[in-house]
Length: 221
Figure 1: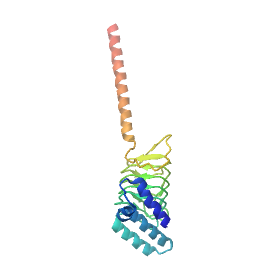
Figure 2: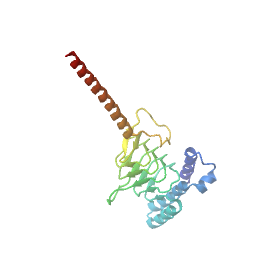
Figure 3: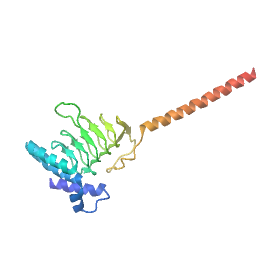
């Protein structure tokens, strides 16, 4: 567990240029505090100490603003930036090298038992305020844009934006490291509008040609 915590702290230096020292990270980063307390709560949860685990998770929620159910499974080097308002549900599973920004919800839908929260694979970035809901799977190397609502599975090496989330496959671009440029995302709605504008311009040009053709025919008569 302590080895995992050291890796969590190391991940902060790799992804946050504001981090200056280990002591600063340990004392002043609520995302790190939330992960550390979750490691303890999850250990107790697996030992069937459910009440104590929930108490620890609620204390962490009050202190950090991050709500992680002790049943959630979290991999190595999770980076929670700022953290306020993040919710991670009981059956959620998070892989390695995942980055989550403030206001993100990894939630469930309905009242069904069993698996009802998302599964996140490795090297995923979830932007500010995004919602990932239901027992869906987000594959490796995915970026989810801020404010997006994701309700369906997402294939690897993809970008998701919008409400509901739309998938834009990033063709031919393999991600080797964690890509934190969650603001640099394509806009499928804007692309469709541009396509419509080009289509309208093409139709207008064709109509003008037809009108000129009619005028030439009348002059010939």
